[in-house]
Image 1: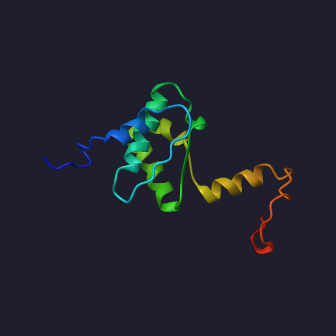
Image 2 (image 1 turned 90 degrees about the horizontal axis):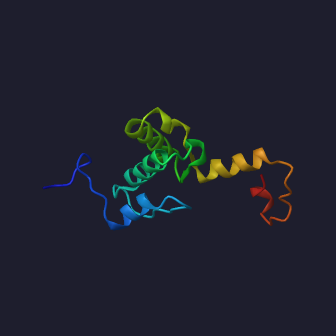
Length: 116
């Protein structure tokens, strides 16, 4: 039987990521390997265990992946998943800098052109 999205079964490492609730998990894999599925199942499990959506952070590299992740969370888990923080690494870091402008970033030695 060919594996499809409807009958997808996580492999051993994907299941480890789904089951690990405490702490961070980084998924490194190529396109179409089930990263978003794995994250969706992990977020679903976290919400079932009573973790508040706003306490969950999912980071990715592209805006397209962020949009796809948010859409899948809501479609598969429901409206509660709309409170999960999904962002690109870049926008998340910029948000931190904007939220905490009084923090001194002068110790960073970035080239002038890259200073925020």
